[in-house]
View (cartoon, rainbow, N blue to C red):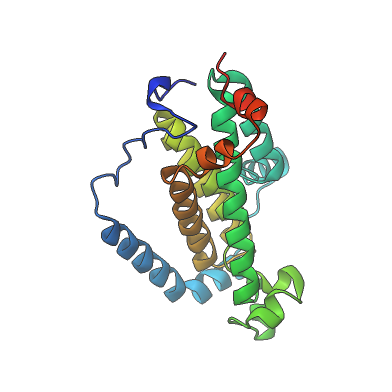
Length: 235
C-alpha cells in the first residue's frame, strides 16, 4: 500500500492520481454525469419492471457470495477497509482519517438528498406508485420513499473513489466492486437505474472535493497538538 510517494503528502493532502478523466475540463465531466443520469431516468421504469418480472436468482453459495460483494462500501466493510489502511500503510493513520471523513460526508449528502426527494421504491410500481414525493414522504415515511439516490451505490463509490485517490494502481478493482454493488441493487429490484447512477455521481463528486480541498488536513490542523502528532505519525 504505497502507491503515492509519502513525500507528496502534507497534512493528508496528496497529489490526485491520474484518472482516465484527468485531462477533461470540469464542465465536460459534469455534462457527462448529467447525460448519464438523464439516460438512466429514461429507462427507469422499463428496467425496474424487467427486474421484477424476470428476476435473476442466484442459488446456494453463489447467492451468498454475491450478497457479500454487494456490501462493498457499506458500514462494516468500510470500517474494516479503513482499519486495514491505518494498519498496513506507513502513512495509514492520516489516509484512514481522510477516507473516513470523505465517506462520512458522502453519507450525509446522500441521506439528505434521499429525504428531500422522497422517491418511491421500485417495488411500489406494481401498486401504481411512481415518482418523487418530496420531504414529507422522504423524511417521514422511511426507506420505502428513500430510493433516490442509492445509499449502497454511494457508499460503494465513496470508498472506491477514496481508495483510488491514495492507491490508483488498484482503481480498476475498486471500481469493479462498486459497479457490481450498483448493478445488484437494480437487478434485486431495490433501486432504479437513476438511483444508483445518482449515488455514484454524488459519491465521486463529494469524495474528490473533500480530498482535493484537503478538508481532512484542515480538520487535523484544528485538533489538539497531541492528536495531530498521533494521526500524522509515520511508521
